[in-house]
Length: 462
Ligand code: DC
Picture 1 (cartoon, rainbow, N blue to C red):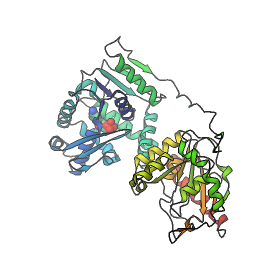
Picture 2: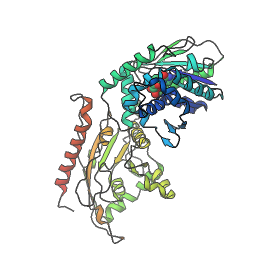
Picture 3: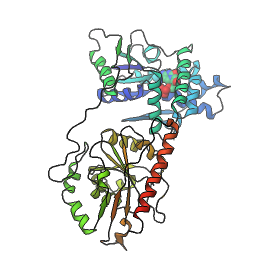
Picture 4: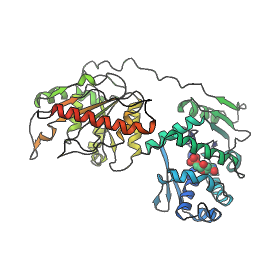
């Protein structure tokens, strides 16, 4: 089975191709990544814009290697150097059309792509798969979507990589690239005569994936329609009436991602801990019973997640430092408790994706926005990335201040000193009244203010 998937920038090709590949057990080839890598190398060698004719030779000798990853962008290497993130940068995006219009570059990369395709069982994604690279493909799909929707998707993809680009800038970039890719003389972006066009505007990923899989299943059967048009609006996700009520025995407020181990421990741990540490928990009613919540807490001790967990009426999915997973049994347990690892000091896309999954499911995400424990200061610098989660639609952000957690262990011995946990009122994040480009900074400022208020209200009471 060979599937050729073409379409303009941001039409959703990569997401759809990866998912279809997973479901049908196919390999996946992101040919845009190949053009992007050659563009990066050409920029570094100073061949763009004046010596583009020399880029073909560079493409022919570059030791390019793509490595598929489940649920993530393809990893790209040149020799031993990884360029996965660099090739998605703005400079590469702005120059890739010019480089990919160069005949010598196309000749080299088309040949590499064909070599991949002849091995079969593959889905190839690009601009000229159905027309030039694999005109013999079993299934050909041409994805389209409105430009604004494509720009939004691209914005989200960049956000996940920790990069912010305003929407109007993205619309302009994509329109320029569309024009260039469609008008070039060689292998322009064009729907093959026998390709099925799917307009994905307003369609969910699942609907598009299902449509492509259905075409694959029908291969050889009756002829397919040539245009499938998606519904005008994505259907609202159903609200499960169970969330928000309490689990019968443990008394924890139900959430869509609750795990058995967490629920089991919630049955007896919180009461015991609250008693031993004479815990004072205030404002827990600020945590809404249903819907996505970010609990953003200050951080003084490794035990903070534990104390926050016993104070919160809902299960918390903590973003925790990846080092905890190096001791396998511990990693296993905290994973079963709903936590997931984050590599600190790096743009960890996997962690961001899991955090967004937690919120999209309508569960509670636990974060320590200072990034690491603070020993001296009351509040460390708040990481700008937290705003990305707070600004997500429908998310309630609750600031939490914990006091006394740094005193429960002294000289490696446990002490049952008092612990106080205060949940603040929800932080109001900016909406349409501000341009998108300013919202993240304002949301961060408001979170800092909220922490300061809570810290001053609780100071001197430890
Ligand atoms: O899919 P993408 O945005 O990563 O692709 C980057 C650029 O590479 C795109 O603007 C045009 C070019 N390209 C191409 O010319 N032919 C392909 N098969 C794939 C990409």
